[in-house]
Amino acid sequence: MHQILWVDDDKDDLELFCEAVRDVSEEATVVPVHSGQEAVDYLERKEGHPDFPCLMVLDMNMPGLSGRDTLARLRGNDRFSNLPIIVFTTSNSPLDRMFCDKFGVEMLTKPVEYDALRTLARKLLQVCRCRQES
Image (cartoon, rainbow, N blue to C red):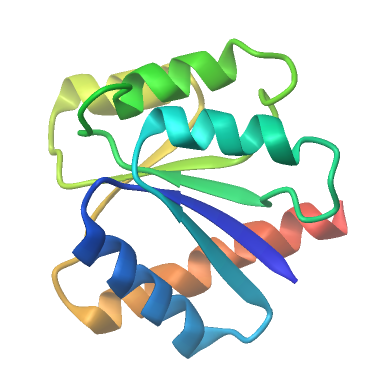
């Protein structure tokens, strides 16, 4: 079973992604959290457990601990520096892209169409499969 930690303050986006993952795979679950701080707390609780996420999908624009702050905190922590993270955002900002590049994290734009979201869900699950094989 693959577990994806999805960090987004937009409940509609969370719900759509969960549905897209269910549509493309029975071997994956999505754990939704609504803030960067919730994500950090979740990872700290799950560290060392067999159900630790194989991937974290992170929204850039969130109140409180933003996606930028969350990414910097996790990449600066040796315990979580190897966790695959993909930033999933509506942002087109070159500064956001440069920030993600600095940490070696792919930045993807949220698709408008559901079929594109399903395709993206397949791609994200492939990250989990590759990680499991290594």
